[in-house]
Every structure is written in C-alpha cells, then in structure tokens.
Length: 216
Image 1 (cartoon, rainbow, N blue to C red):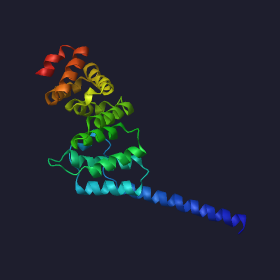
Image 2: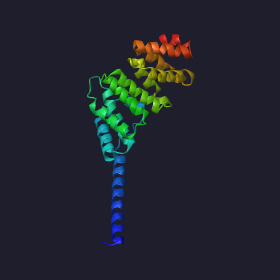
Image 3: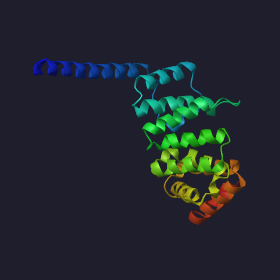
C-alpha cells in the first residue's frame, strides 16, 4: 500500500470519527431537556419525558459534563420532591457519574449532600459533600440558601471545617445579600439544636441586632 493511499485511508477514518461525534453532539442537543444547571430547577419533580430526554442526551455524549449534570439534576428532582421514600440509587449514581467528569461542579456536590440527607447517610459523608460544594464554589451566592439549610438541618456542623465555611455564608448574607436574610429566619425555624446554636453564634458575631429577628 502506497504512502498516499495510507494517508487517504487515515484521513477518511479521522473524518468519519469527527462526523460521528458531530452527529451525536447534534442529536444530544435536540434531545436534551431544558437546561437544568440551577439549584432552583430541583424545586419540583421532573416529568417522565424530561427524565428520558435528559438521560438520552447524556448517553449520546457521555463526555459532556453539562449533559451529565442535567440528567443528574433531573433524576435528583424526582427523589427530593417525593413524599414517599423514592428510590435514590439512580439519582445518586447519576450525580456521582457527573462528578467524575466535572469534579469542579459545586452544584453537583450540593445535590449529592441533599440526596445523602434524604437517604439518611452518615453525617460525616454529608459534611464531606457540603465541604466540597463550598471549596469548589465559595462565590456561588445562588447556592447559599440551600447549603445553609442543609448544613443547619442536621448534625454536620460538628465538623469544624464545615462550620467555618458555613459561617462565611452567614456573613455574606448579613453584609452583602440582604435579600437572603429571610432564609436565615426560615433555616433557624427548621434547624436542629446544633444548627440553631451555630446560627445564633454566627449571626451574633456579625449583626447582634438580627438575633431577635432570627428567633421571632
């Protein structure tokens, strides 16, 4: 086989591979669900069609971290909004799969913590997931309410590193994010004993006057 023929054969294989990837990417774009890369999108359970569409898009392009994240959030929304003990294994696997491709995704770490809380995982596992959410997205102000709600609802704040990170969220709300102050009041009402003690101490250190609002 001549060098020219070998080159043409190699070029044909490359074109075929690129074309296959392009077609798969285009198909995933058509089949993907409405973008779900927001914490607000797990506020209600996704439909069967949305779940199927997100799963297919993720399957067509397995290396697309955004598509994996969309599927993970779609699956998680059905678990987190179920009044019954909905099976969480599929959602957990989807979130962990997404994190393998995009370990930098603070939203995915938070959703993992929420699922772990739902399935009554050990406190130290939930704390580790929450810490990763903080460490990969400390400036994600959109995640603050959900992170604080998760951290204060159980006993994860016995982890001193997590408590220190969570204090940063409380400080941010009291100094820069006044529109999120009502969320602190809601968190306090729902918090565990450890969570309430944390909120009282953290708020007192930044804005002592807000303690009365917090408790009322």
